[in-house]
Image (cartoon, rainbow, N blue to C red; front, side):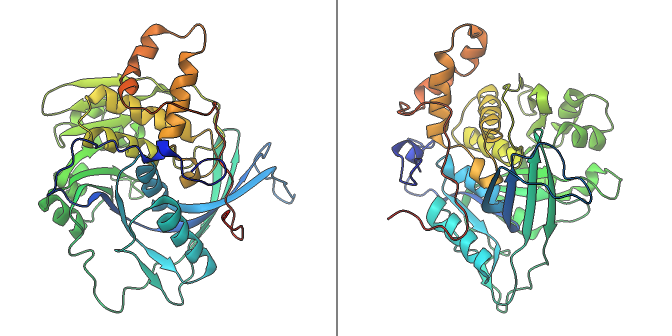
Length: 370
């Protein structure tokens, strides 16, 4: 969408153009999880202080949780299917419409749950960080069994969040049906950090933990050593290094790649990890070299932290094209750094707008322009 909420030609760029065939699955990427309504306050000078009232200079609302990843994938041109529960309150209706109508995400595997209220997260962004407060209850099981999770849709790829000590039937099913599984993992609250406890890792094409998680799971004190150790368990291991960028190892070939982070002024880091994964998935499905995939993932994540909100901040091809056009015009750029992103030349549309871009801020109650 452009700044007036109208379709933008650049957002329709298909990264898999030329790779599609008649017998391909209609879905590029499948994912499942919890959708939150995110209410984001920005423009805070500091963290809220107990016993005081803080005023934020900005506010917005958007679908959050797994919707961050789904939106990031859809904005990069991938046909995205999401299985999630939605409340039958106004929040749930807003999130459903924003994802289905606003982002073109397939919600055939999703359901509306009568009498169940939507999970909510309030996020406060300040000093490049965020503090969040969430509330919600687990969605009740469907009254009648559906195709998911027993039979997820055929897809080129699926994205999973691994849970220590637990397996998910749909992950193995999706892998058997030909999907490449990309997985991340959350903090291990048990403190065991047992790699054997991530049983679904055996189905994965790529595993993308952060540096702290990777080192704890591999009992190493170096994120690069952790990535090499993980590459013995999964075809591709990617370890995110925060402000230092990311490091990846292809276990099947021994190839490694490391890309530094792009220096940006961060407004809100919410969803940046999801955007990184979406960028890496896009490059993988498009068949790009490992270093290009890593660079693209880092770029999309860097662009996302300059906007507030998880799903709101996910960049599309318009933002990527505008960034590439702008950085090439800045005097004094490191030629080697520019060459790292030269692969974009053959992909991007001509940007018609100046950088930085700012989207309209959708908020519950506003109506889309006619």
